Length: 130
Image (cartoon, rainbow, N blue to C red; front, side, top):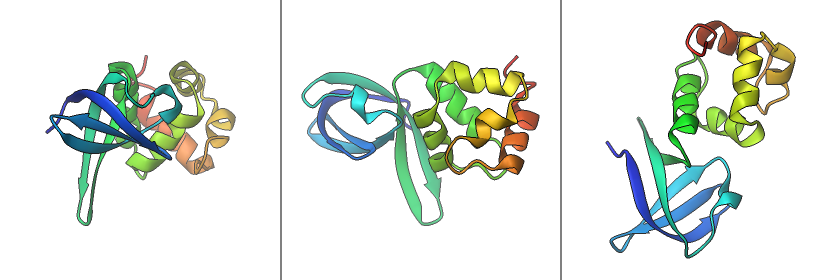
């Protein structure tokens, strides 16, 4: 399992960065590709998703973002791509505050999050994020 990559940002394609490490380019999905710049040296913390017919890397600027991502994907019915979309569309503090204050309305405004999913996020994570 990969924990992080440190290398040069070689390219940015939509929601994915290509980070070059020892002449190998790794494609890594990130929540905020606009925070990366071609040519800069960066460290990216990783989550490796492996499931039946798909395998990809998800990258994080810091461990706090990775921790929240891992908590989100632990929610029943919430996958890595949805969790990444949540991180893309809200700040970490906003998400934690919504969970702690039972703010279903805020969570429902996030892409692909309906009422049941928002309620499940709060139910599953409220105890963990205190």
